[in-house]
Image 1: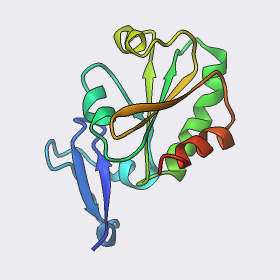
Image 2 (image 1 turned 120 degrees about the horizontal axis):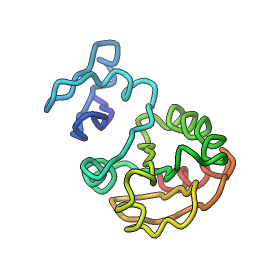
Image 3 (image 1 turned 90 degrees about the vertical axis):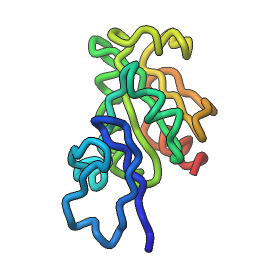
Length: 147
């Protein structure tokens, strides 16, 4: 039996969903929130100070984090690409975003000087980064290297 590991977007709990039961309504084992969107469409997970460690640092899957600001023009241009990547890597990688204007502690921790900045994590460790508005093929190539 093959399973997909799905991170709950509400509480960051890791849930195993059997692939042969994907047609059913999956719910988080910890908080009961629906995993339907996260499991099927590869939703971009919004990060904050409380859920960063549980989602990024404890993920068994590679993680790409988009550090952005809502007032940044290039960030707005990259946002649809990040959503496309989340959908195409569903079940193989976790794609997240973090608003640096409201979560300055995490931005400072990773020395984010400009946005957009993409950080790539594997086994909870920072392994790669891209600063500036990169194209989807470049971001996918870097994420593919972590699989």
